[in-house]
Image (cartoon, rainbow, N blue to C red; front, side, top):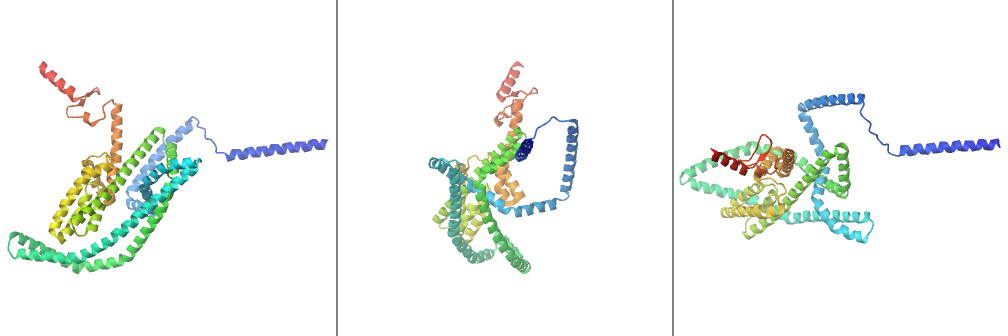
Length: 460
């Protein structure tokens, strides 16, 4: 009997130990909760000390950065080189995302009827959308290569064979003009003489050295081309993962923003991010479609006018049209020179045709496709292109307009918010020459100001 009691007690103790172990496992298996307590004096002093420490550390880092800008820029450039496949993947995903969204919008409701499960329709729809977008991308690339590369090669080959003879004909024409002893012929002869001397010096001194440099860098150029193609292939693979999990990435970023910032600032950042996506997607994708249309119209027009170098000039005009405002002129000037060398009369026709085409693009095609995607006036567009081009070259000229549009939107939002706090109108039309805000902070419209002036003049 006594042994039975001891055995029972041992079993109870064992059960108690096992329950404690299970409760301990459950406690450590679950995520611990963090309870916020009121700030104590020690914590307040510690937070003040951390503030001073962070300010001093930031000042030291800023001072260090000023004297090591080259090393920092080198690190950034190295990081950009390593991250090129990811950057290419994000860019490709950004361009293919509209196609994926359209396929999802069309296919997902139909798959929900066939498959009641919530996950399978989404996965199937997304897979079909990504496959369709990649198929369209490959088809466009293959079609452009098959149509453009042979024609571009023949155009460049004809240009290489024709341009020297055309230059010789130009020199003969100038010599004939020189024989007439006119003022213009004398000026042209001097220009040709100086140009000939410069060309001879360049052939003797610089050409051989530049040829050696080109031959030395030829292997490096081939390696760079192969590396670029490999980065593009990896970028396509990265874009597939980005497109397939874009909602998850968006939710994770949103969670991080809400965890790091106060709700007010987090909502502001998310709003600016959404607006930036609207501006960039509307501008870049619209500009690509607009440039493709301009390239096709240029090809049709040059074919009808029987111009030389039709494919080459159409590609140049279409590609450079991606650059806002200055792009058409950047592409038209070398194209006009090529056609002028072949036949001056056709060169004049080409200039007239390009002017008409750009008026059509600027007044009809561009506004229909782009709309008011940036919200910038012509002055700010030119300012953004010049600033972006001066700082970052061709990519800056392309991306400068949407980037400045985002900055312009943020500044406008802050200005309007400050005006609303002061109970003042936000529209720019309210602030004409005669409108003002008195010392009490009250807005006075120009009509009221005119009535006040008329009233004072009548009293006098």
